[in-house]
Amino acid sequence: MDRSALDRQRGLGCASLCLHCREMSQRLFLRSFLVSVVSRKPSQDRWPPLTYRVLQTPQCSPGGLAVTPNSDRTIYTTRISSMTVNIQDGHDFQDQLVNNETPVVVDFHTQWCGRCKILGPRLEKVVAKQHREVLMAKVDIDDHTDLTTEYEVLAVPTVLAMKNGDVVDKFVGIKDEDRLEACLKKLMG
Image (cartoon, rainbow, N blue to C red; front, side):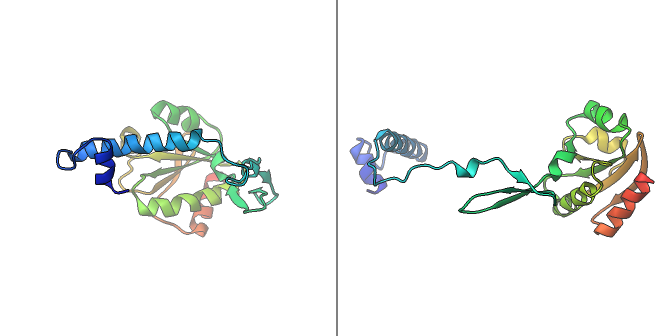
């Protein structure tokens, strides 16, 4: 059934409908159609029973990967994100990073920056190798202009290595894993 036939069925003339009204009538028709389909009881052979195997709890392996067993597919995820802190505001930055005795790597980034999207996972991987001896924090410069001004962030990605509230090392741009590991050694040493 095309749109004009649906409009005529509902008593609406094609020429009198504006685009907004047409979209609204389509939404209402779709909603009534979905309600009628969902409320019907399926026959035994029509729809297969739902299985909940996809919702199993991941089992962790020694390599740091979480494996969710499933006969249809296996999903691999990493536990790296649990060591990463997303800074909410200046007080959060002060409490979690500056006043923290654990060495911290701070990644100043933005959502729209392509280089930030490359460096972020690479940095998380190198920090994860330190086995929680180093904390990683992410600061979105669009949301926290006060922190970017305070720490003189002029370009993204900018990474600060901080220990006891002091900046130990700083670099701007994409770096390879060797440079990142050297930065962490300097931070921990």
